[in-house]
Image 1: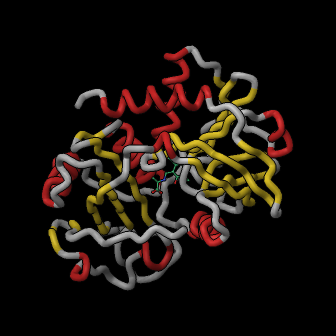
Image 2: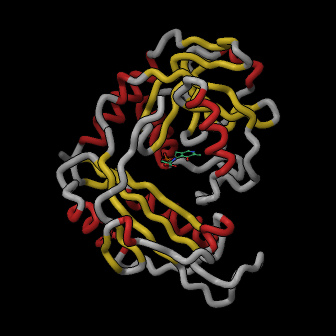
Image 3: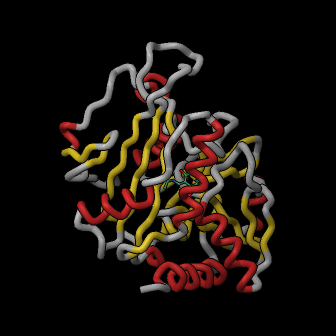
Length: 288
Ligand code: PDD
């Protein structure tokens, strides 16, 4: 089912606060023409950012990879300001940040003197009850580019895949490249087989999820065996648990997996996922 989403009441665009209907950018903005921009989504649990430095580091890495200059000096302060102006300082929420290369006469090469477009807004996020979610997931071919480590606004392949899933009555996709599961259309994938947690290694075929990193830390701390190894679609019969992670997905159980009209996996025993969810809930709420 398609969730209805609302616009925020206010956005921050290039140094100014304004209602979204007044926030406009040039038709020559390179994000409009080429998807030439980077974005980041940071969660705030009751007003407290979670893993903020990791999110800022990833934003810095991605902007660096595509050579967009950006001044980070007041970003953190602005993130708290956007939250408080939206009346979300005591709620569960997330802050969306987007930096594009800005407007320039259309060329495939980068302009020499870019004037980046900086957009930010806060939105309420449902960060409770993730343990109750059970997702029905569609297997889709991963036809994205070879730099999925860059959190680019050019998400057409992700949105096409996810549209197919949602329109078909599913909750998310699991993407497969060369026979191996890579990740979800907007989440990281984990598989549990014989007590070991598997997830795709970092590199150009996945986004280095902040929640992924946390899950691996939790595995280490809880003494749960894990391997950063890609899992084969053909080995799905060896899987007892699948879960998906992300900033707003948190740790969500995959109830069933489908391809070509067939159910190829049904959740059996969620023991390890439940332990990780419990620890995740504890850590995200720890300082409150
Ligand atoms: N999506 N992989 C992809 C392709 C993603 O888009 C996301 C997050 C993740 C999980 O990353 P993290 O744990 O750092 O949120 C993995 C965000 C939230 C989005 O597009 O809205």
